[in-house]
Image (cartoon, rainbow, N blue to C red; front, side, top):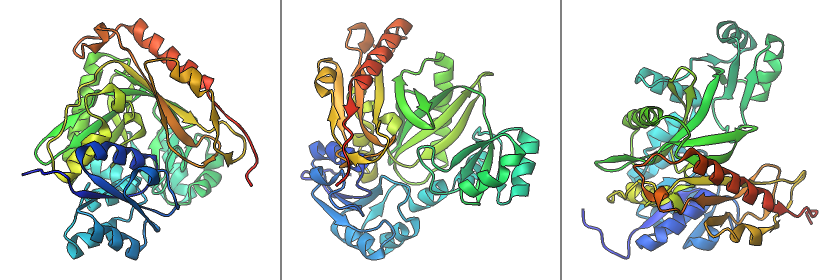
Length: 399
């Protein structure tokens, strides 16, 4: 393989914050980006070469994208796997990760069956299409997390169910066709950002994820667990990559149970919110790695630079309103804090509007082979939470 600059043009289906950060990572590599997104002036628009305004399942829009780029990837699971497969045979363009992988991951039941059949440890699960089947699952598992098979994200489409009397309402709330998964009493939630290249695979250190209301609030690197647990999470992530076709970054979410097991929760076939820490906290970010991987270029280092905490800036308003965030100066006063604003025009309750990354810049912290001092990690977490609490949205009516 010979790489020359200026580089190729990369097409991205989706122009949200992930598309924006992909384009920011692509630019230093000499790679230009064109995004396809239905929202005019989407968050990625200011940093890409062009935006095609169109729906993710619009054949004409997808074909236009394929005709203008050298390779295609996606930053959202709403991308149409069949259309992406079709353009690989019509245009001289590659699509990564493979459309077949996207199709498998899009359906949570098929995803879980694929992992289970490959011997990957997962929570027990059952297909659920009727109230009777959900009640049967409750008889077997006692308590379940009911998940819509498609379309769910950030907790949407997930409903915990413990009482058979609530079965009908729960099934209706997720759209009918679902998967019932044993509700796991986990010690902590972990994730591994894994990269599949042309000939090599690499993994970032496992992170510990803190969720509230099913939405990620912060990721802590390294995860506050044993070295053995981190090694097992890494090994499971590498096994997951073996089940997936195509190149790119995959966010692999896991549960660590009280008895020491690592169970795979879900896979994202793209850069993941829990990997945002890599922009400042690792030698190469998940976004740079994704660009390199989908283009078939050599991968970068996934070693962490220092202990890091990433915290999301979520919409704190009660009703949608124009996005105006205050308190930035107090955040930037912490010289080891990085601010990322996603450029969304409207803030809604719990909508992801940006994130903050805080790093430990002491000399000892830069030894990636050393076990960080727990008190230093806790101090970093407390700094991150103070910074997050220092910012607030001004609530003004929409015009």
